[in-house]
Image (cartoon, rainbow, N blue to C red; front, top):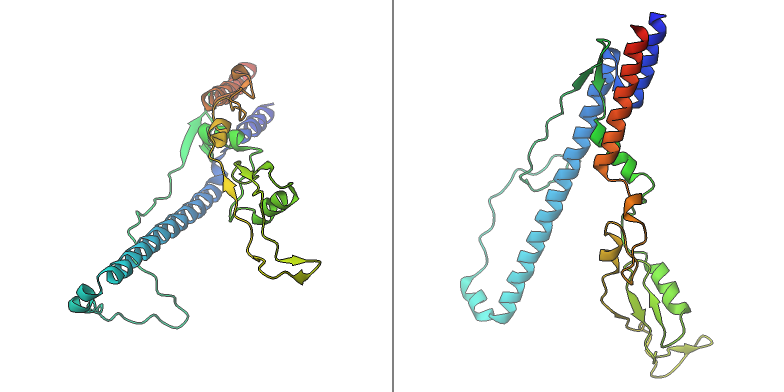
Length: 252
């Protein structure tokens, strides 16, 4: 009977991402891998910021030289940087960026009323955040230009459509230059795409409110139907403690 309660408790705790001592090495490996991924992402973001700052600095320098070529000629060229050791074969030289070194988080422990110790792989807060993020699709990369283009081209002249990427209404120009008819070029036609005029709005601001609102400012959800992160954490903690209490009372 004791074996039943022990195994049942393990199963309950695993639902809250709490594992027994035999899983310590696996958790350490997981934490190490996740820390390395976060470190890599942090360095990539810092490098991207550094390159953007250098690009802006170089653009400003070129602009200044164009405005005042005499001063640029008088000042001469900037001194060449000190020679560096060339990278080895197959290596790519990267600028050094100041990024803090992340530490692998320590494993936290949880002891039940029955005296059994478990290793916390995921905290209640992390589980709650995952529940909140579930079902939310996050897309990376460039805006869907083809989607916008197809929507705009399908709209009649003079109408107003909504840009599906930026959620901004797009006014279609009343006059569009024609570059060809039935494949034949027209003299004086402009082959460039028609310019689009976007009207500023606060659609995205309203959509991100709690509760979210439609473009007219009306609530899309009743405020009492929304569950906050703190409430999810409370529910999870209560469910976990209720399981442990039931096991302890049943066993004793």
